[in-house]
Image (cartoon, rainbow, N blue to C red; front, top):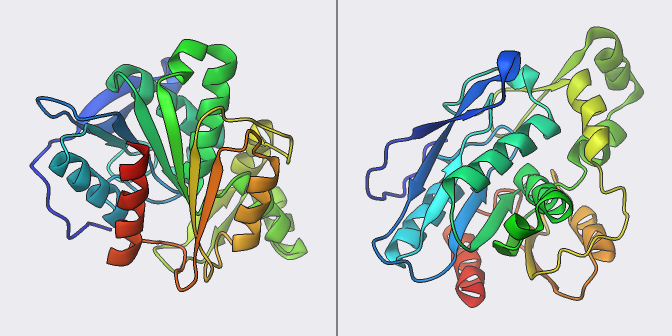
Length: 267
């Protein structure tokens, strides 16, 4: 949904990603102050969310007010991006996140991932640490908001009834009702491809600070799911902050104040 927050006008630009039949253009908004006051902020949206959401726009406004660069984008099939959500996969969205991070941002960055964006942020960091350590070193910290780690397996497949699983396998998709928008289309391809990108509770040391914000009234990404993440993120640099009266979105003024307070400490 569009945000009530107002920031200096910035027109989306397009970044080509992929080749051949997989070629697509990913819209992004990058704002760079004349003189940066610290690491930039790199925003990763959730499933079926977009860079014009309340939290993403508020982040960009806060960054502009503090002379910090910010970058946000729409995954393919989301927001104003090309493509259909039905063609989306975790691997496809990681590829887009990596392209925007590497080709649009520069210098140190703090990656902020909301819901599925938290999963993508962790996967992007893991991928860069394995394949491009110098590029991974630019990520100075992670801020995860209700992180939906291993989303397709833990929060979708394992929670679906036998009837829904059968529909996905036989029909190829399932329309999942949503409290926030139109029903989500969950495809067989999304589920099966997602199994190539699981943490599967194996120890992972991010090697930098990780701050996690979690609402205790969240039914989409339950607090128990997030607490479990802290059991296999190693390195003793993980900080979990639970908000007793918050639900999934964590976009109320007091939630945003908390987010910005934690960002200020990292900066």
